[in-house]
Length: 171
Picture (cartoon, rainbow, N blue to C red):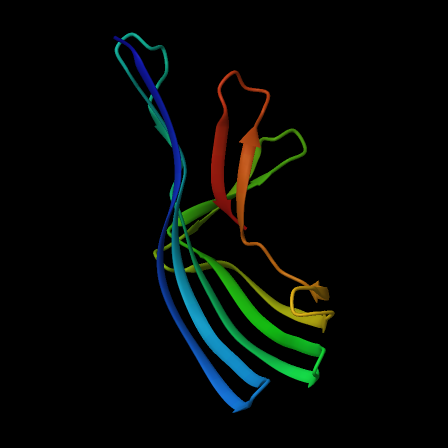
């Protein structure tokens, strides 16, 4: 019996607080915060039996993601409402871990090592959003919206391999 296993995963620990303040009917303020601790297992390969593959595990990666947000929803007229807001987010990739620099041929030319919870790289972003809703009838409405978001986790896929390989990695 030969067995071959590939694995990639993310483990999250989350904390989130949401609040609402009602100024009046049709006028609501929402605000809150969140904090996520991510542990990434980018890739692990194991085999047993007569399978000709060496067991390999890529180095775990760690990150802390936080955000504060505020939004205001109000009814302008009986048929028009607007919802606008702003979200501030921060994403920090933390140690322990190593960061490699490569030359143009893909050879490692430098390695930076980071200790437990040491900051490797931090990204800060503002994400504005606005939605305008026109109520045409009790059953119909038309919405227009603008939103900017930032993504800090990425799924890398290799579609040229005989077996699908998907790896989760932080920014």
